[in-house]
Image 1 (cartoon, helix red, strand yellow):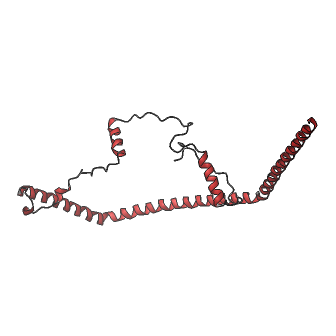
Image 2 (cartoon, rainbow, N blue to C red):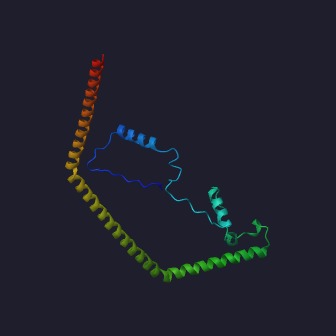
Length: 206
């Protein structure tokens, strides 16, 4: 996020697109006017950051995350209890293998019962949930379409306003250029008169 919000005062429907050389010259002027640390140092008008009041646990967690080390895999559930091992492939006692097989079988039976209940009674609830989500989606789509229409109206109004003022802006720009030219001509003429006066003074003094 930039430290200073950028506000572009432009007239895209009137202004002429700058040439690549003009754009490069403008970008060079902008870059040369920036301070070297402007992209890494906060603006002086920004308030200082508040001191951190994190607990030691949160501080350690932030340090771990910032170190860019991959987090260890979660092992909250031991999946090996659901694996069935044959007596020939394991050094565990037969009683332990039977206990693991029983646990796995119980889990699979419970899972099968849950799936059958979901297939029998959960279909309607699933369809109702999808219908509710679809209604929410349609409402959001209507809001997006309304906002797009508002944006289009603003863009059209902006374009019409700029095109209506184009002649006046062109006239003011030409008047400004002519005024600058007259000022320069006046300064050149004044400089010529000043030099002529100095030359005459030197000639009279000699």
